[in-house]
Length: 177
Image (tube, rainbow, N blue to C red; front, side, top):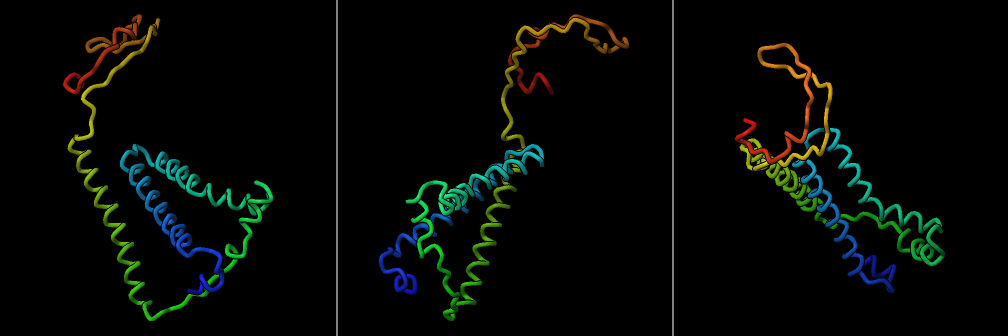
């Protein structure tokens, strides 16, 4: 009601919608992080992927800041410097502080449980071989290695002409086990 009293020309439903979309973006971020973690093969790759996702999520904040600085035009600057964007509302406890705190902690641990449970399921399936490829297709083109040293089983090393196209084809798990 405080919002409606201070800004009667603005619709409260749009305020709620924008806040809901922010929450949805947070869940999309968590989902993307989950996918990145499930597909990662090295830690540095996880770091770079999460950094890229975070940058993309902050593009709207960057655009809003640029519009406030008159980089995107006067009309955008007027829209972004409106009084409703500069107003801070005081925090009020409506006697529901304890209930709200319990609710937020429940949501936090529920999100954590879903993320960890999903990672446990995917990790268990990966160990079981559910996500392995049935075959690998290899095509080296017309590469020739003229002075290649090959270690032979009974000899030390032998110099051979290596023709990579001989190794082209489809490899199945039975062949490389």
